[in-house]
Structures are given as structure tokens and as C-alpha cells.
Length: 132
Image 1 (tube, rainbow, N blue to C red):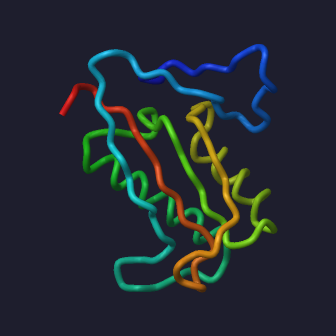
Image 2: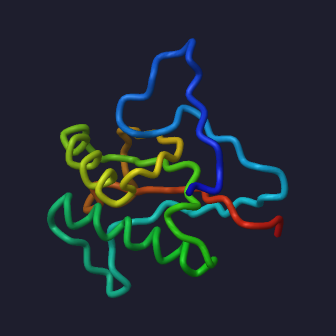
């Protein structure tokens, strides 16, 4: 069960892709801001394919959540930066595999990414159980 309430206004277009149009946090909850996670290992290795890079980035996100005592159920907002729109469909499929039925607010942007080897970067916001 998510730790937040998804909102999809009936007088606005419905989401197309399994995400929430808005997220309402209950009183007494704090936020964890996860900086953009990159597709690079601790040893500096960047996988060659988009699928491998995307999987690695989601692993990094889960590591950051775990370090804060949280999990994917706590994600309320995910922003994905893609180096090229040709990766949009694969990104969506991989994200849906990772998130399952979870529906955080979601944005995907096509952007010039800092390192040309990186095909994406993902930042996220998670809800905490109490105020910090």
C-alpha cells in the first residue's frame, strides 16, 4: 500500500502510462530527495546498452532508498532525463517492470546529459515515515 494518495483529476486528461497526475502526502511525512542517479558503476564502468544503463540507474535509486530505510513504495515523484527520445519506449517498459503497480508522479524529459556516454539520468523524491 503506498504511503501517499494518488490524485487524477476527472476534469483533466487521464494519465497514459501508469503514473499519478498528482501526489498528496499525509500530514507528518517528510521527503527524501534523490539526486540524479547515473548509469555508471562505482568502478567507473558505463554499460553499453540503454537497457543495462536503465537497470543500473534503478538499482542506484533502490540503494539510495534502502540507505534511508525506504523502498520503492515510498517514491512519490520520478523525473527521467533521456539523451534521445528513441529510448522512450524501452525506458517506459523498464520503469514499469521496476515499479509494478506503484504510481508515483512522473516526468520524462529529452535533455543533453552531462556525460555523452550516459543515455539517461533519473532523480526521485520519496516520502518518509516521519518528519526529519
